[in-house]
Length: 225
Image (cartoon, helix red, strand yellow):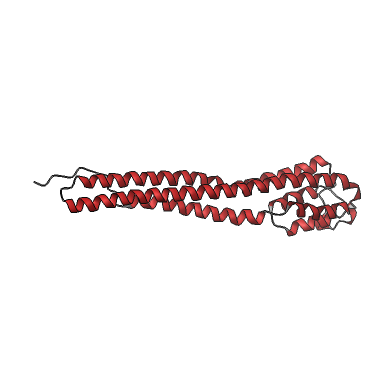
């Protein structure tokens, strides 16, 4: 009677698809974050210089108009501060801080998922490696030498492929997370520096602002004719 093969994990290659799924999610998060973060980045010196020119001339409406034309988090934060130009510095700062609390989570979201996907992808690769080895060693119990060699080779191939895909996924996700975290931190640092500079400009040039000549659509809250 032909000996019965011992039970083994019935993989047959399906575990190999776990890591490409993680890699696909990592690629999707990378593209989405890059499409948000890179347009949100700007030249801080040029940004501040534009507003300095308007604010020192007393043209707050011009500074607000410039900010309305720029679609990025820093412009929206500074715009809310300029809309409080007729109020004390504490209220200007509070207005910018309140807007920053809405903008910063949008800048930082989803990037940490890349670290999670790097770990999960590596673990899925390790799982596939183990499954492949189980398959390979299961083939050793077969009596037929030809099928034994074929099955052993397929199991080892599956194990090595899973290891390779796991490493590729982990390396890609970690590199992209590092790159996007660097871009995120630069945007946040620019926001912190620019808001402080704008607050100083507003405080030092508030006496030059003619609130009565500001058009209604750019009139700071609380300003009356």
